Structures are given as structure tokens and as C-alpha cells.
Amino acid sequence: MEAQFNIILIGGSAGSLQPVISILEQLPEDLRIPVVIVLHRLRNVQSEMDRLLSVKKKITEPEDKEKILPGRIYLAPQNYHLMLEADDTFMLDYSELVNFSRPSIDMTFSSAAIAYQHKVMAILLSGANHDGAAGLCEIAAQGGTAIVQDPAEADFDVMPLAAIAMCDRARVMSIEDINLYIKSNTQAD
Image 1 (tube, helix red, strand yellow):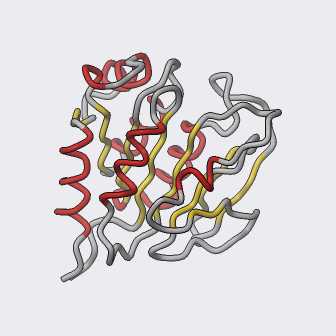
Image 2 (cartoon, one colour):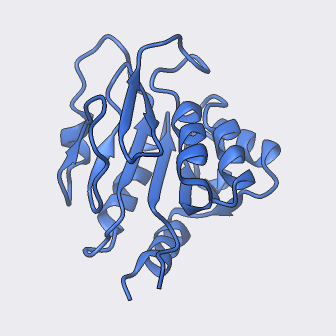
């Protein structure tokens, strides 16, 4: 049976660290698809985000043109836009800020919508700007699954509310429900 998803994307900003850690801790041990995380970070400060998130499984920041491998967890490098290509590779970009951000969640989500179409599960978490909302809509428009953290439980509800307002196909879920959804829709046969 063909897998429902080829990739999982997680985007977040202010207030999203704990939700991301919760999702990573609950990922199935036998998860065979890659997970790509895009978190807003300060651009000119040394970041140890990859170490902080490596709670259950090693997380790496991909290089330009690196192959996207199944079962791996990737973190968008600090101060670069991270895009996904149809040949299952990453592309790093140092162009202008998008929504005041680099990496931009919108840019990653939009590239995944083109490269993976309906085989994408994208999750947008807490944040204080609108980044990710437009990209999430593009994923939904391609038949992918667009999930938004319930604004009522987000530390900063601006990002989830922007996605809900912009994307009528977005599914609103608590972090607990997101974890259950991932488990029930990615288990191996």
C-alpha cells in the first residue's frame, strides 16, 4: 500500500519550542518519512536549536543539495531559507527576508507544495506573525494535509489565527491530537 505522506513539515515561531519537542518525542520509532522543521530564530546569534531538539533522535541542519532521506529529522539552518526540490534534495537560499524571517516557513511550505503535492503533511504552530499561513494554503490547495495548532492552546495565537483565516481547509488540532494524527497516518503496514 502506498504511503499517505512522503514528508512532514513543522513550522513555528514564538512559543513553538515546547510543541515541537512534544511532537518529536511522540514520533513513531519506525517513522520512515523525513521530518523538516522550520523555526524562526535570531539571525546573528549562535544557535544550539539542533542540540535542544535532538531529544529522541538526532536532528541535522541540511547542506545545499543534500539528499532528503527517509526517517531523518532536519532543521532549517539559521539565517537561510530552506526549500525542497522535486528530486528529493534541499536547496538553501540567502535571499531577502520573507515575513521578517529567514528561514521563512512560507518558502519551505510553498516549495514542498510544488515538490510533493498531496503527499505533504504540514503543521503550523504558535507564532507572532503571519509566516506559514500562505504556504499552508498552497499545501492544502495541492491536496496535502494542512494542520494548525489550536490557537486557544498556543502561546502566541497570531500565526495559527492567520492560517485559519487564510486557509479554510486547515485542520485545527491540539498538540495531543496532532501527535495522534501523525501516529495513525504514518504507521508502517
